[in-house]
Amino acid sequence: MSKLRFTLANRSTCSAMIAILLACGIPAQFAAAQPNADAVDAKNPKQDDVDDKLIPLNKQETVLLDVAGKRVLLKTKVVLREGILEMLVCKKQTKEHESILSVDAQAYAIHAGLAKLGAEKGSPAVFVPKFIPPKGQRIDIFLQWKDAKGRLQRVPAQQWIRYVTKRFYGQALARLPHNVVLANESELRYDKKFKELSWYGSMSKEEREKLLSLSQDKAFRVAINTIYERTLPRPFDTYWVFAGSGFTVDEQTGKQTYNAEHGDIICLANFPTSMIDVAVESSNSGEASLLFEPWVERVPPIGTEVTVELVPVFKKLPKPESND
Image (tube, rainbow, N blue to C red; front, side):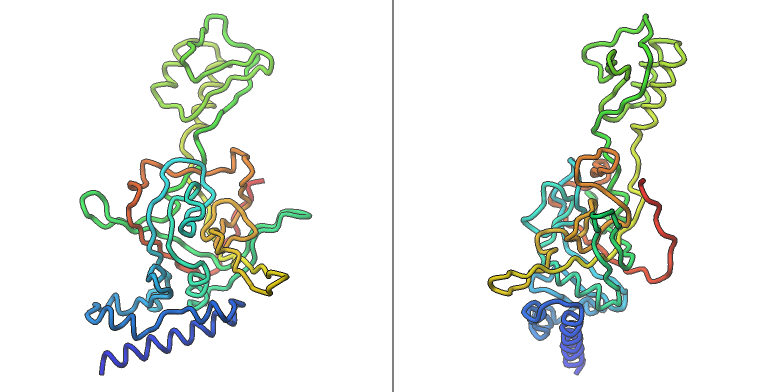
């Protein structure tokens, strides 16, 4: 009897999911692709109480709905630890070269799970005639994985991301002190034409002290300290919203395509196709101050399985500040 109740509950939930998909504008052919509840139950007849509450929303069982916990879970893998980021999570075999995590799932299944929890989709970023940031329900994101010792870890997704450090940092300096000679192998350079001191990448405390020991010139020391402060890792300091992506219709066939299926699931750079996007103006055009990279020391090895928790936030929060 308990198994029957569970099966009927799953079937009821899946039926409700299909209705939500249609209400949210997801085409009927996508709604019909939901998994068979009987098959899910038969495959896992001895699930514990926690697992019984997780409803698979796709045949790969990589998108799970936790109604009681008010969250959607994504089963992902680490695919990138170093490089410029445009995504936190991309769809498998799309944008792994610029995303920390990849999920083998249809984007619409994730959209449906968030909608089932009551998350209101907003709209992706608009770029012309003026920039309008993405809007929608705030989504808090957490990451779960097991470390090298098998211990379960859980952190806010922000902890794996920082503003890019592998870039040039420039600081105005009228002249280089006459007693300072920069070694060829040093990352520090001085441009006489533009009167600028520059440095590439992060500067360690040891490197700063070594450079400061070259001269007691006040302007030089201020420039070194300023560059050092600017190169310190700066954590990702905003949150994500449920922008909801959109649809493209093939004029010849009339077929609708959910735009996030191209890979833009959880973004760090604003895209008009984003399903979940950062709540502020970000860039994918090479503006260094707005680019992000993995906080490599915190990201586990390539291939590590990571469960991504998507938790809609329903209480009102202050609007994020713009990067302007």
